[in-house]
Picture (cartoon, one colour):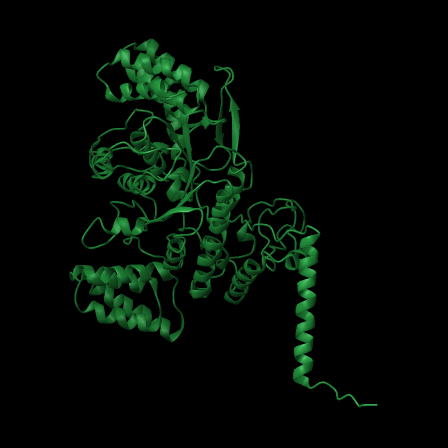
Length: 606
């Protein structure tokens, strides 16, 4: 009988490893065969409007127009009412993104999705172009993925536009205010690990069995378990939704002690964007709906947020920054700022250096330092370079019709290649001018590539953009045309129009002002026209129709009341009534080209 020698440690380790791998593979295959799904999409609730009160939208039935219904927002969207069922002869586009797509600062007509609709309608006069603005304040790719799944349940979409990237770090930015740096780092790594393992059925089953579940709202333990160990924050498939976290329950970390935004966090942002938008593209690819992805433009001149630095290095850093500020604009400031950057990758030092180089006419170096300022900003409300790279990497992916670098397009508008307040009116939201530029790039990207649209008519897109982008700036008062009313106001003492802030109640104030005007004794026809406009964008379409009718009763020569009604009725799919209203508008003012174009479009439609 031959003696058997014991396995060497190396062979024993290899055998054990092979056994474990085989067991994991068999378990994974078995779970797949029995129908176990991977981990559900992750969503978050760091902002009060994030998927706390679904649905994505609500259907409203008209009382004044039998058989007509339209969609009203269910989240903090910005779309105008649109038909619940896609009308024949129409081309329907969905726009996804955060507040930069939403058009924060303007009403729906001032945002770039509306300008896309206008330009495509001009290029393709035989179809009814409907661009639905699903952009929502503070949405990142996680919310976009949820919205895409909901949107895909409604048939009839022809194109999807994605203008997103600014908000990919908002969640981590929120949590670092309430987590110690070490905890924040572990949390970020946990999110990345779960993202890698999301497709594993074994991981999903284990997480369902052993993972920490979010605590139901209203219980005594509501604030004891934020679910950070497993990344469960917000509603998930099979779990009860929980409200947005009351973060101050955790106690804020002093700013100087907070986790700093660095390579790990930016890796999370880039990978999360790729992960979620990749899924979004696949969803629409499965429906044969092409996607256009855009790299959003930041404002270089927006001063980045930074935290105080501590210790001896921190003292030296702040001393250098103070000395540089005292010498701002001179050659003496530059070496001080470079010395400060040798101590820390500081957003305020990068920003100050870029500003200083500008005053010295060193334009070629400024762009790099503005980009670095954005990369290291502690409150990341602009797209960071890593996310830009992730966006541009979608070029050539199946299901992606085009990738548009809007940042680069904005930079090419001036020799210094700086994006300033001309095109981005604050830190990340396109101005009225910038919105026209975006629309032009979209129109050129899709021209001749979509069978549902056919071949475009001969329209000089660049000339249209250059002409139209100046119009809002040349006005001195609000535009009462329903399809042009942006909500911008004008002050003779200011060079630029005044934007509105949704979260400060500006829209509600506008609505209240218009309703107060028509409730006052002897309201004018224009008071009623304005009330109709605000009611329409407040999804009160029946009430808007009543307001425009009253405007015409008071002033039969107010042709715009008919034109606004025609546009509103076409928007909700009531084409027969819209055709009648458009005919009345052209009869009232035969010389008005816009009225004639609307009437001609309605006559062409099925």
